[in-house]
Image (cartoon, rainbow, N blue to C red):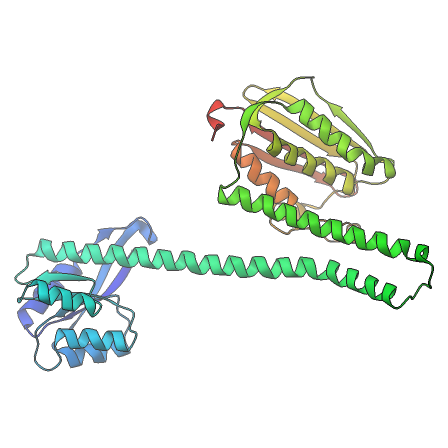
Length: 379
């Protein structure tokens, strides 16, 4: 149970003791806090000066503040709370209930207003309202802090990912500027090719980021229809054949001619492109990629197996995080955004699906994706 610290400020001893008695036994339900309950630690102050001393030396969440007191009045205490930037929620308590007092208290930062005499139920009601407002504010602040932290981490990682290719391109351009390889333009073909590879990698990173952002924000428009999954896979295989042939890698598709799924064809294309391109990229020369598709009740199961470099168990455990790339001696020259499998996992979730990987170091990997075929996915 989470406890809120409450300060009761009133020059009437009976009023303080009565309110303390009620609140010390009072709890409220709050699903967003530990164990779903909020209780109250209650402290008292007999006047405004004592209240300010306590507020400046102890952390409080809520103040029940009497409006009319000797010395510092309730409004003056409110002013000092505001002036000293004390983070506390204040409920003004007074026997002089009027619109004018309520307006003055609100202008000075009071959260709510409670007129004397009040019953235990009235006290509980206003404290319950204040406590829930406090919890809501803290949840909002926590979410905002987490958002700032995630944004900072995201920008830091993105800057890191772009720094290396930009530095490489810059160094290549400087070589060309200084005519390091002579005056014949063909001497620079290799440098230009390397620069273009780096530009291609940065472009893929940007496109993957856009895909990921659209999926997570819910702003990606989904065009749901009955899709021939086999045909989408066949097109992806054809797209990847060029890179595969350069390294002697064979890609084969094993599927019936017309396996159908209610889905978005562009999403399915992203899924197959990621799976097959990775299977080629992390394969060995003269290796093999097998793409299998089959219908299982209301699901479509996709399996992509390669004869590549494989992964350890520890590497597999990190595989689906954002900007995660397996870095070792075998992968250090393989370019990638580190976002493809993260996008894959999010897309499969849109189909109430699952993604599994089975891999053995230096033997190969198998990725299995299962997508649920439901007409109610039209969203």
